[in-house]
Length: 169
Length: 104
Image (cartoon, rainbow over all chains, first blue to last red; front, side, top):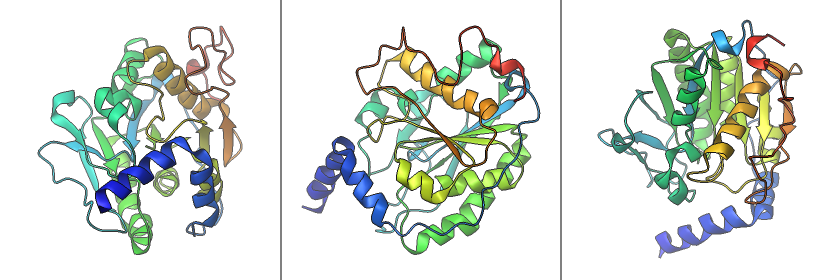
């Protein structure tokens, strides 16, 4: 029953934009101070791009994101950017990933970024992709902000990322 | 998502985010965003729609170059399942401009 209700809610949020709007207007977002800013220092054609997704993508042999915890799973998964499609899966009950299962580029455009690297529009890609699960609530918002996000940021630094694209689900 | 983006930018790496929910993005205030009025689960469009995926990806990357005001959200004009991406003009990438070869 809970599963069915969840599936109905996921479809409602997908097809009725005002529902997402109503949710966002009531949601107690973490209050943030200021807007961080790092200027772009070199052309994209010379930059190493890193990808971060919150679409719940992970390697088939990695532990799936926790779908039981009602406040979401604030952990992340890392996988090589050149992982073949068959080795990736999606664990995320809070959006309809039918389309993403058919073509992962819909949420994580790995093939498209490789094409741009081939054309010289993007300088290159960092070796590792980072993936989170977007549905974070309650106490786990603080876990995400204070632990997971800084850890992922530190790893992106170590990876030599010059620019980062962050994509939702 | 915006919180992760903010944390990365705080470490000194320029970031851009794709948003499907503008109100949430306005609340979390990430540094650079392209907003798309698309259903959840489709930040780069439809499966198999290579031109659409590429177009949105290029817009997001162009925002890294074009957005100079912290917190700016660029509204992408594309309409779900209606826009013809073979002919669509980008608000961030004028034809003929080599935006990827320059800084701001």
